[in-house]
Amino acid sequence: NINEEVYCTEVLSEEITVQRAPASPDANERFGKRDALYGMVYPNLMYNRYGRWLDINIVKPISEEKCHVQIDWFLDESVEGECEK
Image (cartoon, rainbow, N blue to C red):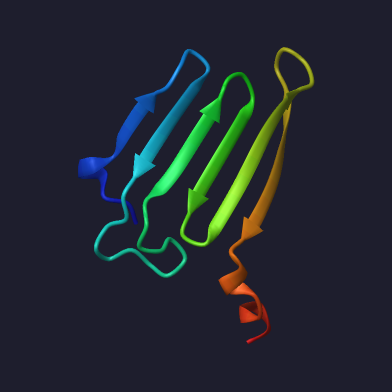
């Protein structure tokens, strides 16, 4: 639920880019009403922040043709207790 018309990419350096994806007017609760931010740090680190979620992805090469992606995700404190409902 992003507003693709104003989606943008900023190149901060040769190693770092940030993509900003504002929420669309009909964004769902999971996405939230704030911008989604996607940060890439060359060569293997990605940060994704959207709504009340943050995930960090680390790409670990195994061979020339394979890799392992480690994904760690975190929830905003406001989500605490919602899973039990």
